[in-house]
Image (cartoon, rainbow, N blue to C red):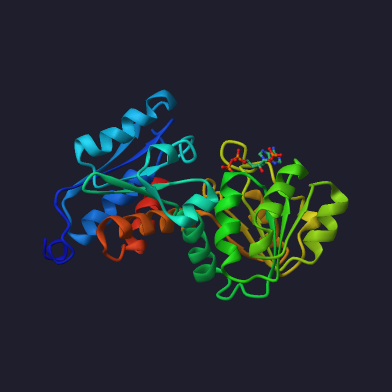
Length: 288
Ligand code: ATR
């Protein structure tokens, strides 16, 4: 179409997402809706890639002429050595979720953290500067969130993790980028640190379908009237968010992050502004 000609996109676009498992990914439906909305011809397909085939699959991006792919669980870290270049933020985070193929030269990006922060600012709290943020979890998802969060100049990020040592390692690694405090998830630590948080963000999978009865933070530790955010988007309103809402908190779920990570990826591939609202509606339709 016209827009593609303006940005030198070669239609039909060939896009996909590599993961294992991949059958339940909502990215194909979301990105196909985006292409339709933009008037672009192309495909975005689920690619079931086993770990031992990851290198061959990345080579296949070049061989088959894919314009770009997303990378999801469990390949976001392991894919890095197979790429020609990795964006500085993705390198610091240590994970790539988006690959751009520029004439056979593959560059890796991470749009998870920036996608999350954009959604948090749009939907819950426009200015994060000066905030005290409690992050639950210290795994791969937390790395993306904390790295993007540091650029917003919060006054302090507290990382609370079941294995305290994993939180301490992350706090030490990025100590030069901002004030990061590490703690465990024992009641004493949670009571003290949650009590002075302006924002609490769950990056763990605790509370995710099919274990939606679980919560990463007991309701008694949630202060009244703060912002509580959960990266999980299935269910759309986790037990953590339900209990936070009952305490008068402003709540923020993971759907916006999922949509925005895809929107940023599409922007990297096409140079066009992604139709986030149509993408969000496509995902919501999947939930029925
Ligand atoms: P992801 O990429 O989704 O972050 P991950 O790298 O495996 O996945 O990290 C999972 C995070 O959730 C970790 O911080 C983990 O805590 P540990 O470092 O102690 O393993 C945390 N987590 C997972 N299951 C948990 C549970 N049942 N209770 C508390 N924390 C949990």
